[in-house]
Amino acid sequence: VAVTQGSVLNLYDNWLDRMGATPGEATSAWSSIGSDASVHELLLPLSTGAKLHLVPEELRGDPEELVRWTREHRIVQAFLPPSYIRWIDEEPGRRLDGLALRQLLTGVESLPEAALHRMREHLAGLKFCFGYGPTEATLYSTAYYDPRPLDRQCPIGRPLAGTRMYLLDERMEPVPVGVAGGVYLGGASLAAGYLHRPDLTAERFLPDPFLPGERVYRTGDLARRLPDGDAVYLGRVDD
Image 1 (cartoon, one colour):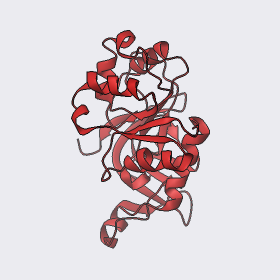
Image 2 (cartoon, rainbow, N blue to C red; image 1 turned 60 degrees about the horizontal axis):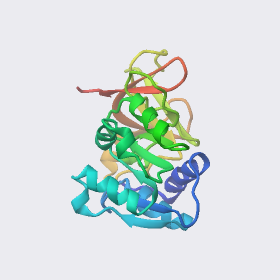
Image 3 (spheres, rainbow, N blue to C red; image 1 turned 180 degrees about the horizontal axis):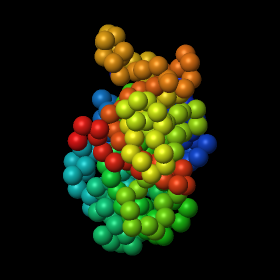
């Protein structure tokens, strides 16, 4: 996937506007260089003057040791998979004790919203970004920032600044609030397409039905919009 510099900078601008960054603070990188998440985890800290710590491979399957390592290095900004957050939620008081975390990126898998809210009860000032989006839209294109103590799966939130999300039916018409629709993403987050694959690019990157001259990416995902404007991920169209 050919992601452009402009798409990456739009992602960074959104993160910094909402989450902030301080030169010299400690950040961690979970993902490998071949993962799209590395665009955020490896390059963003280097652009803000942060200290970057690479998570040792042997800790990725050992949550107790990972938390100890995070505590020891005073990690302020991190990515954690939802499976680790569910593990933390079993004993949040003990497992979060002494952590310096202030900014947490998560997503990819479903996660109970209340689990994120409970983390904030134990880490004052902790900011969350629950992101949704494919590599074709530069890691994540929507985000949910303010978890509440609700018994539901965490919403995928709303489009980032400079990004568009449409929920459309089979006729490419917007669906009403509360009705499932296919997710189409557009705006500054879009990749240029698939490298040396013009056929596949034309199949998945389509003309924007509402903005002449613009494009959207057909994700193949389903979502529905809540009355408050946030969206909820429902699964794949072909499931």
